Amino acid sequence: MWSSFKDVKRLFARHSSLSSPGDDARVSLQEDRLEDLPASPLANECGPRSCGAVLPPTRELAGREDETTGGFVTSFGLGVWFASHIGPALAHKIENQDIALARTGDGRVWFAICDGVSTSFGSRFASALACHAFVDKLAMSNTHDLGAFEDLLCAASFAEDELDKSLMGLLANSSPDAWDDVKGGSMLDTQVIRRLAENTASPINRFWGPVMTSTLLGGVAVRVGNSWKVNLIRIGDGVAEKQNSSGVLDALFGVSSDEFEISNALRPGAPSVALRERVEHATLILEPGELLLLCSDGLARGHNERVLDMLHGLFPDFSLDPSLHSGVAALDLLRRAASRADELFNTMAALPPLFADNLSVILLKCDFNLTYGKA
Image 1 (cartoon, rainbow, N blue to C red):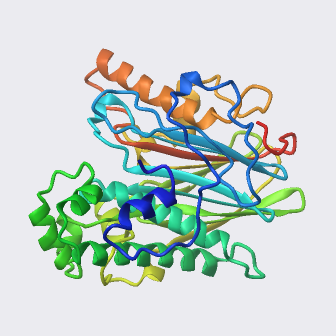
Image 2 (tube, rainbow, N blue to C red):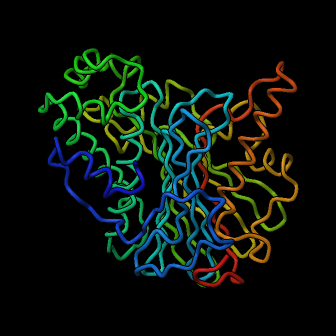
């Protein structure tokens, strides 16, 4: 179960000296199905630096490691909905290699989406570790220039270092259980992986058999008067779109090519290109009524539209109006997207399959009608 960074550390503690940048133990994930939850999952009080309301993992389809999760945090007029889903059945994904996370504290919000490279050994492990390491390290930053690019770069570098430590710990351990824990749904033989891992500094391995590799799209939001300043970085892949209060869209990051994603993603070993040169950066201001969407590439697959245009076209009733939705809004959106993709594929098979991947999304909306702990 990859419900928290603590679980990742506990899993790997048997065969690694993985260090701890933080602990999400304050958030308790239950085994209940979503249908058994009360209408609002926001009743639990969280600490000053928390993941907010987090929904429990669910297994919606037999034989698929779903661990679908979602949640919601607020901070002084900024609502952040986040969720990750295994994706439509048409994608034939046996596990969710994405993760989405958001935390809040000290008048800031930290967030990230990580997408394990599907051809990579241990991609599910890598994305979970990288995402929690990045967010936890960012949350500990106390620089005067809140959310500065150097803070984001430092947090990303820390995440990549943790991947490297984990791989070194794995190589030092011969236990089959240890390798199986990290392997996840990878189809590669463990002995092949050992050879790749031992030679992970070799550039050739980055393109046909990466080890524990993950993209990262994340950042920090800081309140500035009646608006929010958002600093973003992208490493490998991920989509970012801003919608103003009039509905006009601005695409900050589009979908990357597979080669670009693999060659620039976070990974253990000695990179051929320095992290600073692999990072893309964007800064924006969210005014009241404006929305920022971040997502993994799953929501951009099978169509040529901007993601927000596509989602609004499929679901005209979708809204983040606090009077209409609770904290499950992002998870509801992903479930509807997966269901609609399967429906369209089954009735119009000639179309390119829509959303054919794991799905993750973070939605940030500047709305001073939001109150802490409520959506």
